[in-house]
Amino acid sequence: MFSQFDTEIPIRPDDIDMNNHVHNTKYLDYVLAARYIQMTENYKMPMDQFADLNYNLVISTSHIDFKRALKVTDKIIVRTQIDSISGAQCKVNFWVLLKSSNKISAEGYIVYTLISLTSGRPVRIPEAIIEVYSV
Amino acid sequence: MFSQFDTEIPIRPDDIDMNNHVHNTKYLDYVLAARYIQMTENYKMPMDQFADLNYNLVISTSHIDFKRALKVTDKIIVRTQIDSISGAQCKVNFWVLLKSSNKISAEGYIVYTLISLTSGRPVRIPEAIIEVYSV
Amino acid sequence: MFSQFDTEIPIRPDDIDMNNHVHNTKYLDYVLAARYIQMTENYKMPMDQFADLNYNLVISTSHIDFKRALKVTDKIIVRTQIDSISGAQCKVNFWVLLKSSNKISAEGYIVYTLISLTSGRPVRIPEAIIEVYSV
Amino acid sequence: MFSQFDTEIPIRPDDIDMNNHVHNTKYLDYVLAARYIQMTENYKMPMDQFADLNYNLVISTSHIDFKRALKVTDKIIVRTQIDSISGAQCKVNFWVLLKSSNKISAEGYIVYTLISLTSGRPVRIPEAIIEVYSV
Image 1: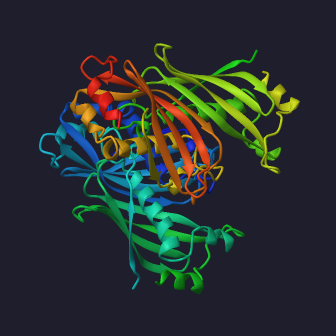
Image 2: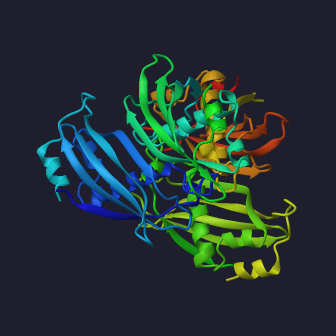
């Protein structure tokens, strides 16, 4: 069982689109921003350590269900939780929550694949990284 | 059976991210840009006609499988095809193809929901719009 | 003499470009995000009050001198200060500062023009708004 | 005297902001996209040749005067022309033109500085590159 981590991500005016709501493609940017912070603060393995170990962590799948549109004045929490790790892949579930009501604005998952920078091919996620993820 | 439509979408330098590839969240922007053009050129119903009819077309789900990273110099074709229409929802499959090789860079689907601007609630997609989609 | 206001704006991974630095066009987004916050927190006149008063505040000029590239891990403060108000226009100077060293990453100015939503034409900034700005 | 080059840059729906117009910071992205294309097509020196020669071309100043807002359905031409070359710097004037009317939507300039990737310092623009620019 993997831990949930919550990170507040500020909405910027440039995230708003012609419908006067946060643009659909910004949600994944919010999740990636939250994961970036959580890798340092919660997992204690900043993203640049992947490059130091000759790895790249690429996104193989993104899936988002949009539930409630967000306004520029909304405050949001991005919650993420690793769902499973298998071979070269790690599936991370996420929820974008309205801070005021805890209601779900969007939810979904990302499948990451670990790539060797040498071969450019997927590599099995090593035990040391699984341990990092198992906080 | 619904038609496939192909639209070339130029990659811009500002779409490139720290990995020197097109940023993951830009793919959906490319697909939305292609749909926007196809609504006018292929379906002959420009997006602003939805507003004129007191409708909004919102995205309920986006799903993307990323296969091959894109570089700033790549040329891409966005292919879309309606998969199914049911109630208030329309599922659109898409493929982002490398123009030179026809290889798939990414594929996925979007589920759109038709919303009444009056009630703010989903409304069954009317026959007239199903007909527009059935080219 | 107008006050200076400082607002920390987080850098997001999606702001980074192919040069592995914050993309040039994001700096103005940071400044606009800071102004948006400062209008509420410092001037006590949130941006949406302009619309309530039948005004729009548009950007007529932006000027930026880039001094030091920013990395994804940098922390920045956006400092702004009204330089002058004249007729329909308000000139705002800004500085993007590295939080750790207080060094200037970029500096410049924005000229805003107040527009009447009724006429679509510039209108002289009224005394009431000049007073709001004069904190 | 340096040549003018014109490049059409398509507006994407994701470039539109809460005011239902092209977001102010996208204009510079359009200009950079046009310059990127023009370096290959007009100057016959693609941007990646700068890196091959151990150079980086960074933006030191951007200045934009916004004249007419752009809608998602507008077609635009980005016109650029080198103004002057001096030491390590090259000043490029630009105009964003409405294709239908040739009216100016925005105009301004960019000052580029040539940087040595070895030293990280500005270097005088060599004669060979001035010649490339002098088409």
